[in-house]
Length: 182
Image (tube, rainbow, N blue to C red):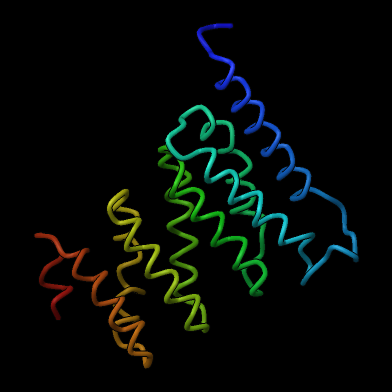
């Protein structure tokens, strides 16, 4: 059994099955009865991403098994509608919760950067919250979105301004203190 116990093997099979299910949903042909805004069965996308997040948390092998499909979801789903944004958010949440893959994390943080350019206050607020969590994992990737984060400090919505200011505080270091305090 290669040193794997019965539980390890069943967990691995479960992860593989969930990854296959998500691949099937992502690559499924158009089916009008399951389609919402051009995305096939977004509720199933979100459920599968949630299960993958749980399976990958603390398990490097399971996380490694799901890297490709998470990258595919992150790059394939359109973010021009709320349905796509919901799936992308869950994908980012999953990527940030599983074991380390720096390339995937940068992709997830870039999605959050795009969310900051969205007109919807809720999407921007959620992006700022997730960026605050992401800064502990990959400060450099978050730093790349410094300009749009600074723009958020001037937002008309007080909760977005407050969250952006908290994020700017976390971004301050010796090299950017002068530019950020302006």
